[in-house]
Image 1 (spheres, rainbow, N blue to C red):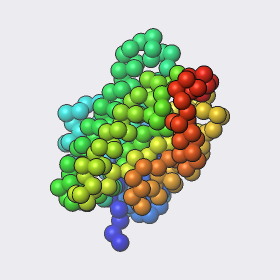
Image 2: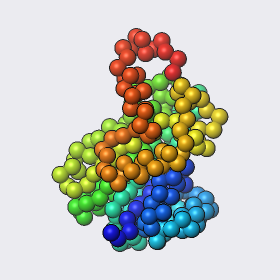
Image 3: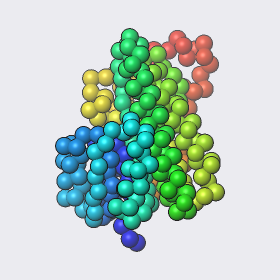
Length: 248
């Protein structure tokens, strides 16, 4: 088969890099979007050494919604089409800081939901025109049920999960698969110094391999690692009165 043509938005995030490494080892053609040019160049150099057959990179403000369609179109043109896209950018604010300064909360919602949803639509439009493609998005287990310690972040991911669900239903008959990924806490710089639910912290490469597998197999909704499906299933079933007494 010809090399996969893969677009990754938020390519400098640790999870995105782990997924990109899997595709690079398979000789994929990669288009990478991120904010920091210097870091992006470093990531691209690593992926080239690992086997990526082609690389296109662009540093851009991912909150600039007006540029999203143009950026996707440039990536599509550079790769000669899009087989897979992964929207993986996001921020994780400290809950207390977000409550003390609503601007921090607004940036979280703008980044994790508004910007991500805008990129999803931009890619979806091109994949729908082509009649094929797999469109993945990284949400979070935090979106399954709000927790006192991170509900500002969780709300943004809950909105993103709902959006991806609706988008997937809309595109189901168009030859485009929408893949919703729900990672639990992952050992990345974003989680440095932060408590994780139950002390569980997954290896980023394990998560990257699972996301790569899910994208290639077209899993519609999955957790990474998979045991979070059981954990969140239990938490979602708890009565509200009992849930509110838990220290999670």
